[in-house]
Length: 244
Ligand SMILES: NC(=O)c1ccc[n+]([C@@H]2O[C@H](COP(=O)([O-])OP(=O)(O)OC[C@H]3O[C@@H](n4cnc5c(N)ncnc54)[C@H](O)[C@@H]3O)[C@@H](O)[C@H]2O)c1
Image (cartoon, rainbow, N blue to C red):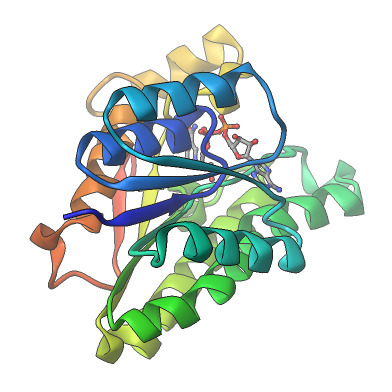
């Protein structure tokens, strides 16, 4: 097996761990990044150390033309795309009353429209291949909401609707579409929270800890594999039981 996985926003955090985990499991990796930096070099190095091919592709998921170019590059290099992981995401938290219009729009543009842009650019190739896996990284707040995150929660809830609708459209083409909804995972995104806030959150989680990027990557690995061949249109929570 030499399947190809394309992961967006994969130089750090959850995306990075997904890329490394899939590389360790025999996939060739197409890794999208926005800015060239040390994190990119280190991630590419780890992927290659795992014995996998790694194509790095600069691009902005919120720009449709950029996504079409990225998809073409992956196909030109590897000939196919078996797994797409829509991971790139941002937060711009603020209570709605104080939120700037552009902060609402930016979060929707990257998280939700970005997921649309990349998927739309790639789905034609998966249809031609007669197989594919699309795994969208949502969030538990897309299911339950969170004060200060109307923009982010709306984008992540939108991803769930997108996932279920697309799963219904392309199931007959042997393309499986699922979402993963992480809870609180230790990454740069959650590092910005104050220590006391993190402690409060941990108390509310039955497993009494924040998740690791590996906790999420293992579920993505499962959804990408043959072991999950009868699962589509689902939202798998990876949240230590935080939301039941
Ligand atoms: N950390 C958590 O607790 C948590 C919880 C639930 C969901 N998530 C989701 O998991 C995903 C990864 O988050 P993370 O915690 O690793 O955060 P992170 O900030 O470490 O990683 C996000 C990545 O997305 C990239 N990115 C941002 N905008 C982009 C764009 N326009 N084009 C291409 N790439 C772009 C960034 O460069 C970065 O590499 C996100 O979708 C996030 O919403 C995270």
